[in-house]
Length: 109
Image 1 (cartoon, rainbow, N blue to C red):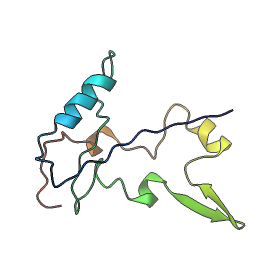
Image 2 (image 1 turned 120 degrees about the vertical axis):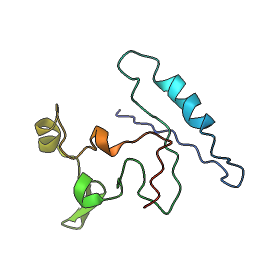
Image 3 (image 1 turned 90 degrees about the horizontal axis):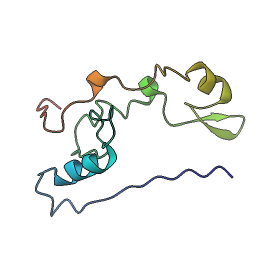
Image 4 (image 1 turned 180 degrees about the vertical axis):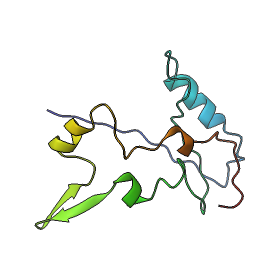
């Protein structure tokens, strides 16, 4: 059986003071191994804005979402051929430049 899981949290933003304690706690838990220092597992974002990573909702650029083929829905980013072709490098993944420090304020967004 192919089991995949995902964990998410939702915070009441009326009580959030923007301190990023949740980000730091999550980072300390999930990035304790060598080579994972750059990872952030908790994205704190406020809308409207560009999102995190920058413009992550751009489905044409990152090939996310669904497409309809012959009355069936399929994920845009998957398929055996695409997975094998992109096994070591996925050109549709955000680059490091698309990620920014959680305290980088982009006022123009």
